[in-house]
Length: 110
Image (cartoon, rainbow, N blue to C red; front, side, top):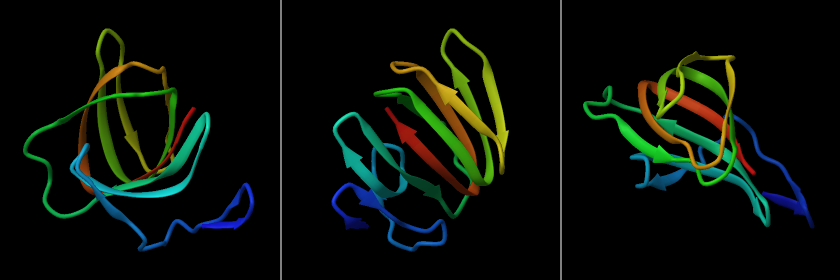
């Protein structure tokens, strides 16, 4: 929520998520301004049967808040992340994600 021009506030416990069909989950956008997007994604329910392939539109920096993620970066390393882990992935990276629900992450695209 924009509480003042250019000042955005939310909470990790928010239930204000909307469907995100691009990654088969839900998203809560904190802010979307020229040059930066920030928010949270979550995945609930059954474990994924198929991985999600996602190309990062900008440098993606993420903090895992809940659950675990196995992220394969094409031509690069494989990341096994759990709650409390931070990662930063270069723009344009082709990534293959497998998450263990419930999963929640905070992300920044810049």
